[in-house]
Structure formats: structure tokens, C-alpha cells
Image (cartoon, rainbow, N blue to C red; front, side):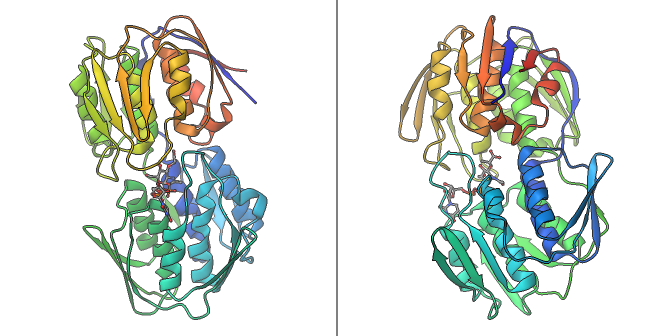
Length: 415
Ligand code: EPZ
């Protein structure tokens, strides 16, 4: 397992372009199962999860050819079974079910793996597929699906699950007639998938949180530019804030980090945004308390920024209170932060953070993707040396994280 060695205390300064979004690329790659011909994804960073997804698509018959910073996918799929050992590596393998069923009317997948941030059931996915007429048999951890009798339907999601929304929309695109799905997730990554499918010829209309899908015969498009990664952007904005730096991020969508921007301004950072650029100036950051923060589905505050923002809160004046509404155990980074001198109390989904002047460098363990990134931010904020172990967790959603941070002046090495 690799580690990062960080000599903290240096303000982050400079300019950086934000890479395309992992959580938009993954469903878009899965949806190529629905397409005919070859599609070029213009920029496709080698996040580990993306590499795993590309490997799955190759094993299912696609021809995947790297082209410049992107990838060409010839959609010559010929299998309906998701390779077991690969689908266990990440949660997003479950969203292959929808496109495989739509295209081939039969599918087989094992229960997905992914970050240990909660039980992460797939009941909403399976309930929706059954309502679309899919017969599902689960045995020994394998999900067998028969979609011979699939039909349009009117569905209502019990929770606006991102993955279930994506899965069920992909399952519906070829169903003759109209499928309605209400209470869908409207995260930017979901909307980017819908945009990609509509560009390929699908007929998906979203009004508020209701999707209306008109079945079509086939889908095809030549190329696509995926939206930038709002979680990487938010993480880098927080890294700049916690080190009292000043940085500009280009190829950014400020609207997608609006809630975080308000939190950072409240603590004393200066933030200017245009439609594709954000500059954060924390050189005169007063580290004021940010009070109460709770994660919500979009457009609420993103759960994927909770760990990084909580880390920022550890050195703010006064007390901050966090409520994690989305996942039931997304505080595994807290014990590690307390090893660095933070003062955090956890009770179920609640966290109470008493601000301290400074954290101290220590050896800590990454336990999940965003929690790991949070520990890097903690190391950057304090003088002395911090070692973050198990950085493979971080590589799942940050491509060459240490190079990004070093380009802004951070002293961080991968060993
Ligand atoms: C997506 O996961 C993201 N992953 C997650 O990002 C993100 O945290 C999450 O959405 C919420 O925004 C990808 O897009 C690949 P959900 P997903 O289904 O689809 C419960 C990261 O750090 N639920 O919206 O798995 C579930 O247990 C990752 O990049 C059910 O109960 O999230 C959770 O409590 C981590 N039954 C809540 O809903 C279901 O059938 C949100 O899950 C499905 C979900």
C-alpha cells in the first residue's frame, strides 16, 4: 500500500485546471452499452474507478483505445455478465444493470463493492427494475435479471438515489412508450449522463425532480466532453482555505459548489467566480466558525465534501456542528483527525467540532476516498510531517492528487 508524506504549513498558491468528474464519467461509460458505433470521451482521467470500469467494458466486448487524454470506445458489446471480481471493486458497477437489460434483456451482476461509508443497499435499484417488468432472482450474492417482459412504467423513488436514478433511466431508454420516474436525484453528474444520452438520441425530459423517458430505437454519438469534477474542485478550494493560500481554478462550474462557497465565505475567505473559473483568496482568512453544516441531496451541501469541510472546521474559531444525512457511517476520518490534535465528538450522524489553533503532524490511515483526501488537507494545514497510509483509496477519485497539490506549492511525496 502506498503512502503520502506531507511537510505541511505552506500556503497553496497558483492556478489549476479541474479534471472531468469521476461520478459523471462512470455512468456515461456504463451507458455506452446502449450505444451503436464508436464514441470518443474527450478527457478521461485515470481515476482507479474509471480504469476498473473501462476494464469491465473491455471484458464485456467493447474495444477501448486511449486517444490523447481521452478514450475511444467501440461499443461492440457481446456479454451480459459483469465480471465478478471487478464489480466487487466499486459501487458503480451496479449501474451496469440498467444498460445491459435495456440492450440485451438479460443481465447478471454480483452485489457491488465500494467505499465502506455505510451499508449501501441497492433496494431502490431493484424495486424500480421490478416495476419496469424485470424478473430478479438473487442467489449467493449474484443478481440474475430477466428483462424479456420489460415495459414502460410510472416509478417513484423512495429516496433520490444517484445510482438508482442513473440505472433506471438507462434501463428505460428503449422501452416503447413513456416511463415516468419521480423523486429522482438531480446531481450535476446525473444531469450530465442525461445530457450525454439525449445527445445520443434519447428522449429524456426532466422537470423539477421528475424524469419522463420516451422510448427510442437506438443511440449513437461521436464524442462528448464530461463536466468537471465539483468534488475535486471543492477539495482544492478547502485545501487553499486551510493553508491560507490563494488559488484560481479553471474549467470549474461555480454553481456546483455554491453551498461550499457560502461556507468558505462565512469563515473569512474571499471568493470570486465567473461562469467557468473560481478564485479563492484565504490570505486574510479569519477562520471564523461555520456553525451548523448538514449534508443534503443536490442542490444541498454535498456529502462527498463533508469529510474535507469537517477537517477545515477543526481549526476554525469556536464550535461547528455537522449532520451527515446521506450515509450512516461517514465519519471514519474523525478518529484519524483526533490523532492529529483535533477535538471532535461523534454521536451517530452528528459531529461536534471544537476548533483548535493548529493540528499536529502524525501518521494516519485513509479508510475511504473522501476521508483520505480530508487527511491530506489536515497534513497540509499543520507544520511538521504527516504520513497518510493507504492512498489507493484516494486514487479512486483523485488523479495524481500529489501532483495537483505540488503544482500549487505543497510539499507532498508519494512513496
Ligand atoms: C453516488 O453514490 C456517488 N458515487 C457517491 O460518491 C455519492 O456520495 C452519492 O452518490 C451521494 O451523492 C458515484 O456516483 C459513483 P446514492 P450512490 O444511491 O449512487 C441509500 C464518492 O466519494 N440507498 O445516492 O451509491 C444509500 O445507502 C462517492 O465519489 C439506499 O438505501 O449514492 C445512501 O445512504 C461516495 N438504497 C443514500 O441512499 C438504494 O438502492 C445515497 O446513496 C440506493 C441508495
